[in-house]
Image 1: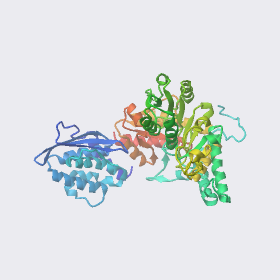
Image 2 (image 1 turned 30 degrees about the vertical axis):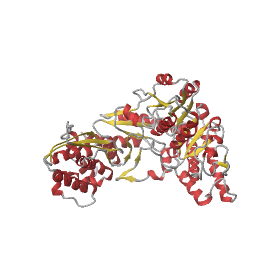
Image 3 (image 1 turned 120 degrees about the vertical axis):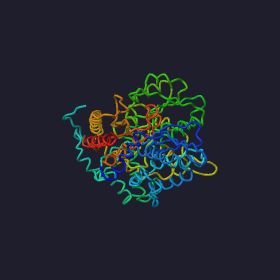
Image 4 (image 1 turned 90 degrees about the horizontal axis):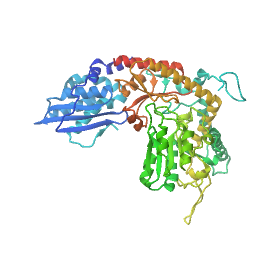
Amino acid sequence: MNEALRELYQETIMGHNRSPRNFRAIDGADARASGHNPLCGDKLTVFLTIEDGRIDDVAFVGEGCAISKASASMMTEALKGRGTEEARSMKDEFLHLVTRDREADEAVLGKLRVFAGVGEFPARVKCAALPWRTLEAALGGRNEPVSTE
Amino acid sequence: MNAGTARTAGAPSVALDVARIRRMFPILHQEVHGHPLVYLDNAATTQKPQQVLEAIDRYYKLDNANVHRGVHLLSERATRAYEAAREKVRAFLNARSTKEIVFTRGTTEAINLVAQSWGRAALAAGDEIVTSTIEHHSNIVPWQILCEQTGATLRVIPVEDSGRLDMDAFHGLLNERTRLVAVGHVSNALGTVNPVREITEAAHAVGALVLLDGAQATPHMHVDVQAIGCDFYALSGHKMYGPTGIGVLWAREEVLGIMPPYQGGGDMISSVSFEGTTYNELPYRFEAGTPDIAGAIGLGAAIDFLEETGIEAIARHEHDLLEYATRRLGELDKIRIIGTAPEKAAVISFEVQGVHPHDVGSLLDHEGVAVRTGHHCAQPTMERFGVPATTRASFAVYNSREDVDRLVDALKTVLDIFA
């Protein structure tokens, strides 16, 4: 198996896929949104509890590939306790990281840096990005489900 | 079938020389991510032999002109080549006449043609169309649209856990309001071969017509529309070693003859004026505009390839691959095959427990093995079998037992990574 693939399916990502963190719904969430990748069947719903502009709780449910699940799981860990503006800029940097449209601020991303290798696999970028785009929709109060297409 | 020595004039030798056949397909000889390509996505589309590529190339280099309208030499040659392809299709399906052979863009357009031409004229509120749970979307959605337009109802034949149609339930669905039964000949998601003669007899007994989606059948088995007795048969060129963009609707002349036009335009008319337009005779009445001439010629060359190679030999070869692959996949833990009907074409849909199909497909791709993951344009099938998607390996004439071994080795890698 080549180096890039090894990096993609590395232990951290596989660990989050096996035991995704915050894998639950939140009853009475302040914000929620659903996202869907029709090409491969990844779908998830992101829930947020927001107090005074701060994300008190964030969780997700859904089904999908290892990349999308790990991305969602690590996203929830990274966002808890952060302000909504901070969450938005983290989302921006994550998307830069995986789409490689420009240099990402890795200091902002912390552990999420493990997804740097996804850019080697264009077909999987959408998988990694889906939870974050769904988050974006939830923060923006959008009601229509997010789709990667 | 005699596995030994009997040869009839012009028949190929009994066992396929797979190595020789592989050499006829230029695209197979490349590497993917550093590994020799193993192409197992034939139910999505097949690769093309040199003779098909050459036929298309030669047409554009020597014979290209518009058909049916010109008096110059090139247009005569183009017309002859196009109509020769139509005759090849007629013979391939054992249709009675070329009047029954309509060239379309593919199976999907053929089915839409029947729905909008035959269906809109024939159906009314209260009428019923019967289809099955395991259809490709192209044999579901046109009927849903037609039912909305006419007030007819769509009834669905359930499927058993093995992927076989529940034939008792099918017989129970038929009644005097049934006007059409539209089912696949072979399921693209599961590989199930449906009992089309039994279905046709039962449908005709209640006065219903029968449409068969033959996209996944024609590359793998002999199809004789007169023997089956159906009323419509649809096929796609690109699923049977021909180019994309061409397909066929076969329809019995008695039915096709009374169907109103589908698309209007040039070629399908006899005369046009603002006082009134008259339509052309069969089959041209259903071929509006300049057709995919090169595509039809390519399809004709693909039929030649199938006949020269021998459909029975191909069927035997693919059956051997199916058995071998089923056995080898059975040796692996955590692989569940979906679609285990007693009669199957060489298609294996499976799930790898604990691993999403998208991960399976990507990792297989990185080993050079091309399979398809997803719902295979058969979302009701996925729902029925309780899976969001499956991984599907589908075999063709140029696949070998080595290809199966490569698939199994690649799956072992997947299982290791996700252990």
